[in-house]
Length: 375
Image 1 (cartoon, rainbow, N blue to C red):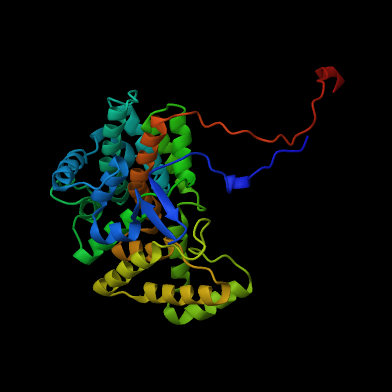
Image 2 (spheres, one colour):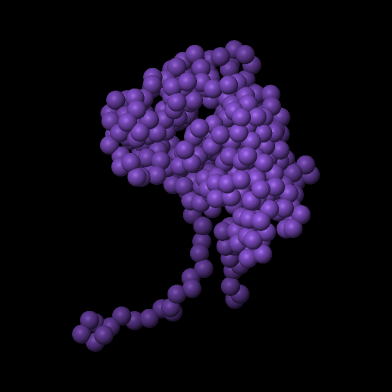
């Protein structure tokens, strides 16, 4: 009997079906519910895209207004959660903080044990609304600053700036951030989404599934790449150093962050949209060097290695120019990707089967145990 074939990393394995998103091979375009994500980013706000992911269709004006009203009403976190976040060690990573905060939200939520579809949707909305407030709380309280109250008159993106900085920046900055949220919102069966679906398949609650997803997203091979990109750009420092830096890295076959993708082989379709908005924003804020360095690196990588950048490559400098500290980049990813995780958790529940793959045993053969005196 031949040994079964093992697909390390589940490469090439289809684990289930989904109607939420797909990378279309003929256009190399990521679609949400059939819509190319670059079109959604140009013509929709993040809230519309969340509605699409959760409901299957884009909202009309009435549906969007009701959805926004419901989300904005849930943005406050409790004093107990705020105090807990304030007690976190300052040196800890914000991803650990938001993972713990979501677990605490489960303890506070009156519907944690109710896994009905209606209750799960209500809990998803509360998580969508409160995770940004928890991220901002970690940032503000960690610096000894007061956390502003959320504003119900602001969009999801604009309110996040208000929470973090006490002000809303120029429209071009808010638009670039909103675009990033849309582009990061969903991406088929990625590591964190599969982790969420695996936990949800046990019939655990949405808070448990999201906590697992956050843990998976923390890893640098998944969610931490935009942080690594910005550290790389800061190491280069100036555009005139970019050519020499990239040549040295390639000559020594060293890793260059923000390039390549397991799914996209001819370029990440999200990159042109994010790059365009990041460059527009850089001009508005008056600091173009990070995007200039990025252009040089991207051109060299394409010319010498035929490798294209992924979404993390333009998003890292974009977030930095917006004023966010580098450790906040991946928590922002959480605030966006919660929309996709919740869509998959709801979809998993519709036709659930416990996710329990097999393994090929590679240990020692079966043997008899000897008593301790004979060992």
